[in-house]
Length: 101
Image (cartoon, rainbow, N blue to C red; front, side, top):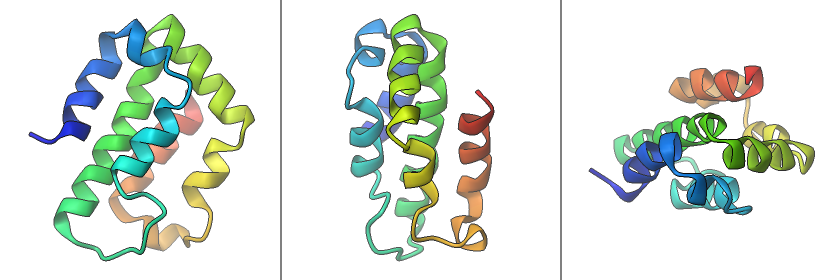
């Protein structure tokens, strides 16, 4: 189990994590989102877990506020910036879930 996976689980229930304003950016950074795409299994897994954690943040009141603020700062644009949709691979589901919430 990775740190990103633990954060994914905490995001479901932790108002403290949800209230952390830079949580979305920090989760993506920890997962290597935006770094050079290597396609390594660990990178793909961590990125998928980070997107699930972002989606899970919507489950707490604080998390909803944090994600709304992140959306206003352009979180969705940052998720796809510099990548073609075909390159996103398994992360498509996570991005779509975040966009729908």
